[in-house]
Length: 135
Length: 264
Ligand code: SF4
Ligand code: SF4
Ligand code: SF4
Image 1 (cartoon, rainbow over the protein chains, first blue to last red):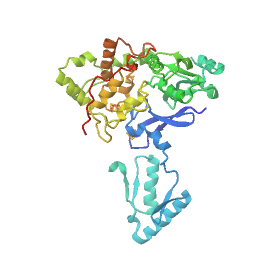
Image 2 (cartoon, rainbow over the protein chains, first blue to last red):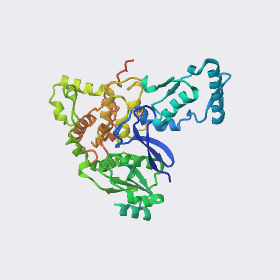
Image 3 (cartoon, protein in one colour):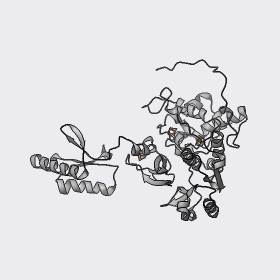
Image 4 (cartoon, rainbow over the protein chains, first blue to last red):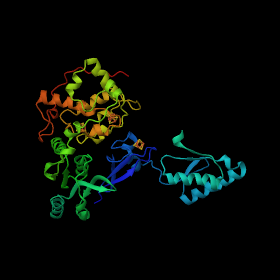
């Protein structure tokens, strides 16, 4: 029997509302607002209310896709990262590091944002870092 | 309370008990079964209001034979159960309850603790702590404009419907494309809110969860209290006080109003 409520945070926007995922019989069937969460105090917008739907959606991407000859092909993570790194190197060599920009997100943690800017500055060598909360 | 639940689980009086547990500082709904029976000592009475009965309907929908125990932390939990029995969403023979009411978490008590209201809302809108008669003290035009001001803030999150312990329809009128067009904010007002209000007649138990969940601070409970007043006055039916079916579960013989085409 797998019945539980799993506290989590809505990943859709930078507000970061607290939610409870409702797991009934091992299936994620619903999302409830966390009533005592200091951010949303038991309220959610329509996106947060329906989070369980994208988790279960058949359209959900579960694997990286690489565009090859105009078509998206499924591939493994190692392969996708390698292709991306090779293409970055090519672009930097040809056009310089400032031809690349890194967009970070309100939907990831502070620490992940820190890593992303570090990657931009120390690995790629550019100050082109921006954030969706500034749009 | 804990000893009772433990005994029920061990003796098979209930297969699952829905109560509360403190998880990382948040008292949230929790399922207790024989598999995690050692957690029963952590069972607490939640102060935050969740509808454990609505959670029970989801368990029962998948497992109609499962015996479910429910913690009742407020008087409205029992009223919600009555409504759900009356509408065949739960089978009373499968349900066991433990009452642990806390007066300070009663829905009536919430009404007596008015929150501060901005001067703008005082001038333009309606306050949650008002009673239907306070609204009736305004003239008709004022009443209409004040309600429209409140409704115009709606962000169509469907939180009022989702959280409501007695909202369970598979197909919801609030998602019917002829009533509420997709993609508009606010949604069609006042239709959106009035459709819900009418559907709450004979169902709403005045628990206040919808109002608590409304990000737009709309006094929904006040609206449904008015509806409830009519149900009591006209139909002499007190919602939730017994498992009797509401007068609205009886279908009429013929439609008396002419159908009106919907303007595109
Ligand atoms: S529920 Fe809505 S407002 Fe809250 S974090 Fe998610 S998307 Fe943002
Ligand atoms: S007060 Fe709101 S949430 Fe509670 S039963 Fe009535 S409509 Fe539903
Ligand atoms: S909870 Fe409030 S904002 Fe959300 S749909 Fe209901 S009335 Fe509108």
